[in-house]
Image 1 (cartoon, rainbow, N blue to C red):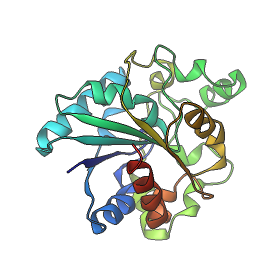
Image 2 (cartoon, rainbow, N blue to C red):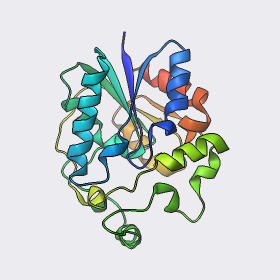
Image 3 (tube, rainbow, N blue to C red):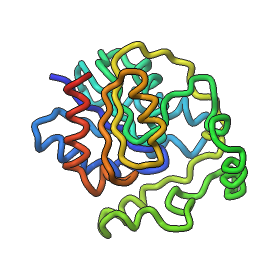
Length: 226
């Protein structure tokens, strides 16, 4: 049986993916939700994230094959996460995320104006918590109890994370994509151009927390086609 391994965004915590994990489990899917919260506050962030992920999988005792699912900022690191494991990885699924850009940093892939805007918010080498990046708080999309848990978990990520070169790791296995928000339309289009299975939801970036049944259905549809 394939185990689905869920990775939350480095800018959030595992509670952002727990409703999706619970929904998959209730549907009989073997699922593991990995907690990567404590690895992003100091550089080198990529190295710390990948090491913590591999340790968490070792500690879990999970056996392969695995499908790794990365939300948002975890998506570009999926090939490196897979490469760090001794366990068989059968596929990768990008959940409302950028695609990998090996050898390039985040700041090399976005509008320089956005880089400048984000850099201006840095204090003592740390970015503000993710919910403070926007004029309108994105966590208002989430029901109150879960909203406060997500807010409490959100780390102050080291600015170095956005400057560090992403790992150069090749992945030749199956991939899929689940689109939650219009912000990642271009990434879903690129995934389709590569022949990947793609499912599109007309929702928002935090739909794994607020609409887990719909996201679980889309994810299972992609998994069935990997």
